[in-house]
Image (tube, rainbow, N blue to C red; front, side):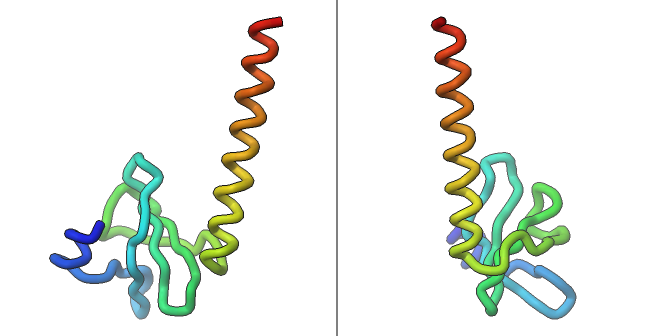
Length: 85
């Protein structure tokens, strides 16, 4: 990400706003933070395509990830428990 930022600069989020890409979902979808602190998600696995808002703040974005991780962990534990019953 840092190499891309150094070479190309910020990503274009809208016609009038740019942001700094700070992460990926591992499948190519990017997450970027704009100047107001809103988090955007790329609509495709590309640095140059459209981005859409995904969370109003970085804190809320991290809370979303926390909830999704907790749900996945609980579901995995339940699934494993039923397999061993």
